[in-house]
Length: 332
Image 1 (cartoon, rainbow, N blue to C red):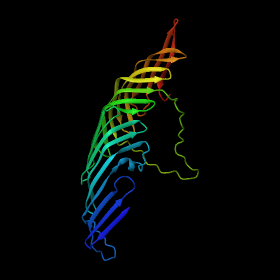
Image 2 (image 1 turned 45 degrees about the vertical axis):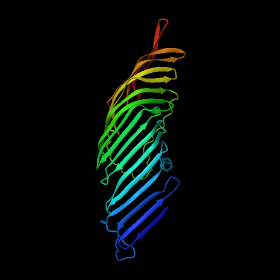
Image 3 (image 1 turned 90 degrees about the vertical axis):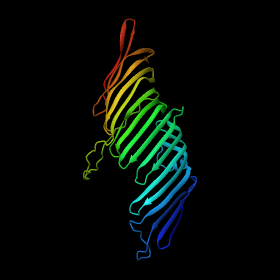
Image 4 (image 1 turned 120 degrees about the horizontal axis):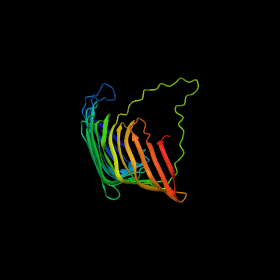
């Protein structure tokens, strides 16, 4: 880090340069009016005009190693050119920052976006615009636009048959049009998510659950004050659907399903309505095939997301018909 400052009795100038093996050094220059205040150290007035610039060009992955986001990865060429204005008491920032030839990975979902191009513009009044264009591993488009003016938000995400989930147990190709509007504190997320194709592979046994002990109180200590729970601030109005091509396979099961769900409520307390229904399927038990005679998972728009199950596996042979049924709420 190199820091230089100069004061001529009227203006103070400061420049900083930060290096660290992440491409070109970060440069920052600031100028403001500063007059003697009667002491040895001059003090700027809150209304003193402020001007400056911050510039950097380098590779995103070199800085990303410093970001505490282990499940995310970002690479690409970054160019930042910001202007500092306003006053000492009310500073402002404007300018642009771009990412070209980028790559983003979500390690948990298996999402990989290539040919990432992101452009952002910041206005002196605090508003900003971000546009993103990228491709999935097979070239399907993914785009996003986020615009903020004051407290107002207008954002949109669009995908077209993009492979967004690629894990050992699940892969999913998705076409989506999702919008977020309203204010930054109380946005409404609405849109349509079409599952073009999904593969669910039953490759792992269900892990044991861990009991939640809740709040632990030390004997003799006063009870902590608790704040009343706040309702979720993000309202939801989504449709998630697939007319077919949701395949669930593994552990003897080979099946295809359809779904049509409406998701409302809030992000903190979602309410789901609709059903996931079987199209066809069979399951091999003890070396014998059982037909998936009934298969439905129905959501009833309750405060607790606890779908009702109605699944029947039936086999008939030698004049004997029998099977296995699973019914009732998922929690019981």
